[in-house]
Length: 299
Image 1 (tube, rainbow, N blue to C red):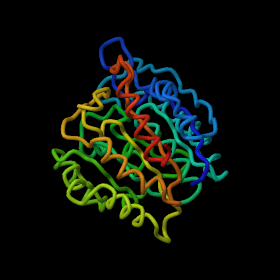
Image 2 (image 1 turned 60 degrees about the horizontal axis):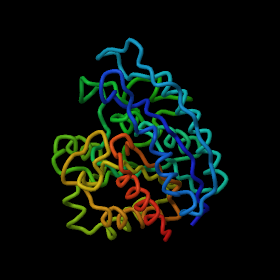
Image 3 (image 1 turned 135 degrees about the vertical axis):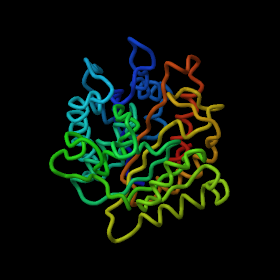
């Protein structure tokens, strides 16, 4: 495996406030995983921090589009610069978020380099866009739609590179079985979706190997893995903004991720959504660090 480099992307720009007058706590994810010695355990190089702009929705109201849009656009370019540099150098970036909107930085970086796919390991597809919702606003639930060119131009067409991802190059894993309506749209767009139930039927390790092989095609230069902590069942990972029931368990997640992350076509990984504010004793953070370390084949 290429040499891992850990960099922090502690942005919470893409989430709604958990309560009036507060900000989402997922910007503390990177610090919490570093407390679990994730850099040392991965034998990774130090990639530093890509500092985000201030979280400030100003006078934003429903119907105004994506909040924090200017800050998100600026941060996406800044994060893309860092990720691009590491990928071109032959490193394996492990990006510690943050909310899911940091995925735009990875998608833009890889679009600059060539044509890359996305393996989104997430409880929900993050595919809200003006064509299917009247609640556009939080980019953390919209980043895959934005990356595939759906939504406002100031986020979907940075540097004139729209779309950053082609529909057919996106695959979803671990979506909750209850999201039938969302799945119908994705399947119609030829975006493969594997729900939790299907993953268990087919076996997570076998599915991971099959997915890695599917990304190994002449038309693709590689793929990126997006890991949202809410793919885990809330009995083991309650510290997320949307703890939906009936998720994956740690051994299943490791079995799925292992073959994807060990593929020579995998360009890197980002980890998102875990919120230390919701994990006062740190047990969920310790578990997430263990999952990432084990999935990357480290002891």
